[in-house]
Image (cartoon, rainbow, N blue to C red):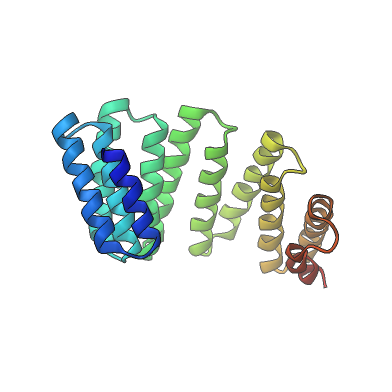
Amino acid sequence: VAEVLIRLAGCHLKQDDCARAQALYERAQDICEAHYGAEHPAMAQCFDHLAELHREQGHYPQAHHLLKLALAIYEKSWGEEHPAVARALNNIAAIHVDRGQHGEAVRLYLQSLIVSEAALGEEHPAVVHCLENLAWAHLRQGLQQEAEPLFRRALGIASRLWGDEHPETIHRVQTLAAFYANREQFAQAEPLYRQALSRQEQLLGGEHPELAPLLSSLA
């Protein structure tokens, strides 16, 4: 029943009916607590959903509190080196980004990366996302030299995981190209944009509208 309520709440959230979504999430939380107890991972998942709802509404202190509760449950249930712990750290970091607390976000994104690598290995899709989140957090602080190797490493892992022609890899090529272009390092940016354009043309055809931004970047 709780899972159905959570899915229904998600539908209401997508329709911006936050009040109805919150009522359903809280009902699901009550059911999970009665059935599993207050420190079961199912409760942590309820906290995650409620935190997402509060974040959508800009209620950052409430969201942060719920995510910290979820993190504590995941750590107690599965230990500190578990993918759920990494995801929880990532979610808390995002709250700090929303609040402009970029130094704390960097610390938490780095911790999430370390946990992800320990739990999943150094070449896993979750590690790619952690690297990118950490890179963007550094950029928000103006630390471009810290961000560059993270973007490059994310691209390297994506290429090995999915191959050079996969949309996930092409997206990382474009991200690195934009990073260099924003720094006016056009000699580094141009070949990456051309590489992304060539691969997108192979995937989508020469007339696809998604090619327009790449063509504009090369103009």
